[in-house]
Structure formats: C-alpha cells, structure tokens
Image 1 (cartoon, rainbow, N blue to C red):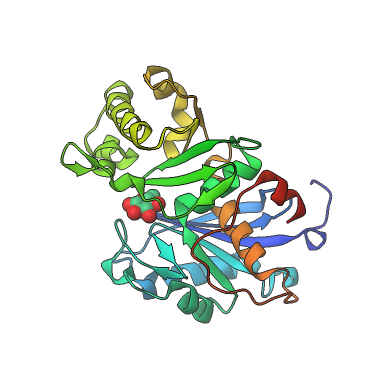
Image 2: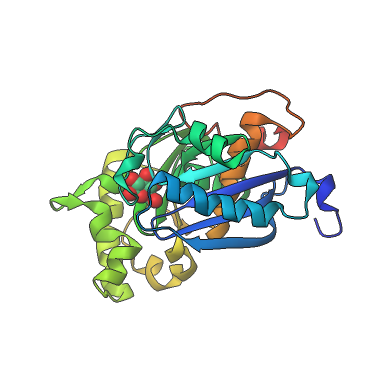
Length: 286
Ligand code: BGC
C-alpha cells in the first residue's frame, strides 16, 4: 500500500489491552496492516476502567493528532475478558472492577468515538484467519494467544465461536494459564525446553476436548516458535501466528469497522455477543 495517501484508505483504530501493556495503532482495514507506528504504554496499576480509559485516551490523541481523516473513526478494543453485548464479564489479568462493566458504552463516552469491544484472543484470531496463518483454513482452527494469560479463539470453517476462555481449563488442579502462559515461563524461569513440555501438556488437553485441525499460536512466544514448536508431541499442525504483535490491534479495528462502517456514519451499529464471522471470503467484501 506504499504511496497511497492515508486519506484514501479505509482506516480503523485498534487497541489491544493486556495485563501488562496497552497497544494501539491506526489500521488499513483492507490490507490488514498498521499504518504508521504501533504505540504502547504500560497498563496502569491498578488497571481499573477509569485508569485504563485515561491511558487509552492518551494513545488515541497521539494516533489521531494531525490526521483529520481519523476523526470519529470507529475504535475497536481487544480486551482480556469474556465480552458479551459490550459488557466485560470476567477479569483474570485486569482489575476486578471490570467484571460486569459496560465497557463499550463507557469507553465510547470517554473516548468520544464509536467503540466496539471484543475478547482479545477472538479479535486477534480474526485477524490471523483473514490476513495471517489461518487464511483460507477450513475445519476447526484453534488460535491460542500466549502472553500474560492464555487466550483462545475457536473457528469452525472460518466462523468464530466467541469467548471460549480456554486459558482457564484446569490443568493439574490449576488454571492452565497459571502453568503454561508466557508469564508462567518467565515467572518460573523455565528454559524453552522445560516450558515446551508444560505447553505440550496444555495442547494435548485442548486437543482432547476440541480436536482441532490446526493450532495457530500467537502472543509474544510466536516470535520464538523455533525454540519450542519442534519439541511439541501433538499430532496436529501447529503454526506460529503471522501478524505477531499486530494481530490484536488489526483484528480489533476490523471488528469496529464492520460494526460501525465508515466515519461518515453508515449504520450506528449495536453491541453483539462477540466479534463477527471471520470467513476469508467475507473479508474480501468487508
Ligand atoms: C482471559 C482471556 C484472555 C486471555 C489472554 C485470560 O486470562 O480470561 O479473556 O483472552 O487471558 O489475554
């Protein structure tokens, strides 16, 4: 897309809210890639809604400064919780006050943009299915994002089953993400080999419940896949995500764009149970 002025592209804004950082970027919706740099700030502590909204507001101002084309653009937010009808229903790695919080309405009020909120793994998975490692994949695809927690996004023939929350499967008496996330690898100072064993156990657990045809691994560890993927014993293809750090931002922007349409206001959109379908063929006409 080099050489195309930003005003001529379909722009979106995406946020990826995590337990340790909040990332944001302007997104070229048709190309599924960032326009300009990815911004990041540390997640405030405590990470209550008011503090997170202030941090997001700062990032939004940086992203839109000097870009009249970005005014009023829909904002998509990937958030580490089950999100139903725009309300965050859980809060594993963020402040408890997000449980039952009308995130979509409140963020729209505070950011003064239309806002769509979805589960962070769901929106990242959506981007991977359209523009990354899952492009054209049919059957059952399980996208796992491995970071502070473990997020999951389940696709059946390209269609998302939202809010699967498989990081919280029980593994030897604990939440699996407490044992097998990247944060657990770092906290327990595990070598890649030692962590690969734990993660392999987790993949088998997921496999025995869902029997996916393909696993796509996202999150920070996807950049180091050569350190652990060859050690996995699972007999299903396991591939690293391709959009790496950008998947969450890109997917969030796509979800918002599809909910609210163009800035001029084609359709006002309404809260949904989760991000829309991720059929690659639908992406072409989005
Ligand atoms: C949350 C999920 C999220 C995952 C990755 C888990 O703790 O419950 O909603 O997708 O972390 O951030």
